[in-house]
Amino acid sequence: MKYFVGVDIGGTRLKAGLVDETHRVCRQRVVWLKEEDKTEEQLLDRLGEIIREVASGHDPIIVGVGVPGIVARDQGMVLRSPNFPAIANFRIQERLEQRISWHVAIDNDAHCVLTGEYLRGAAREHKTFLGFTLGTGIGGAVFQDGHLWRGIDGMAGEFGHVIVDAGGRPCGCGNRGCLEMYVSRMGFRAALQERPIAGMDPNAADMPEALRIAAEAGDSTALQHLETAGTMLGRAIGNLVNALNFRAVVIAGGLAPLLPWMEDSCRAALAECTYPELSDGLALLGTSGEEAAGILGAAMQWKMAPHD
Image (cartoon, rainbow, N blue to C red; front, side, top):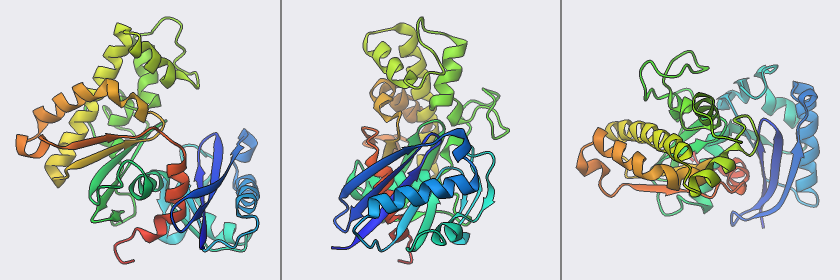
């Protein structure tokens, strides 16, 4: 049996797992990050520890690492990451390989999550699809004929910065009205600051779950926030479907469980933006937000390039 290691780097924790050749994640570990861990040296220390722990007793073919932010995959570099502001032009592949005895491959974290969904998740029956990861921000990926298309510079799939509300909420990228400011943790935080829900803290770690519970209970403000988010998501999907003629869309990430409360408005907006021939029958596939997809995808993303 061949083995691989996948690591999913988040803003607050590292998740790593040992993956076998059948795409089964057979061992997982989590390390919580402190602020002092968010330097290059400290992050490398934490990565080395968790990788050696999950690989114990095995000799993995490769260690794949999913990193949030702008990743120069072919150079093994993280150019910048919103979760690690002290890190820039970080040669993570080379420096991590100096600490462990295995080859390392890196990629954008959203690419890894959606690779995991393709291999053993919501997208397993689709070789061609658009994928969105809804979390603190929004990432994405384009799969065509079973291959992950990264674009010229490796940044294809930045769907969070598709503009869906011209002149709308300001985004950290410098534009206004980006999808990320409506259908992400940041987006819902802004919505709750504009129209609060009694007893709900926009900054709480469990805010998305609290929003889901409020919507399930019929809270009108929660339902309106989710309806607006669905409309914005539908606009983004519609524009991408018009441009690329895809027939399946996967919604993954920690906020994916909110999709049932966004789907009606999402499909209505999608229908307004596209020809019926493009939107009718489009598969909109939500996931459970299950964490293993990022680990599996990180371990196997190196296999997803068209030339492989």
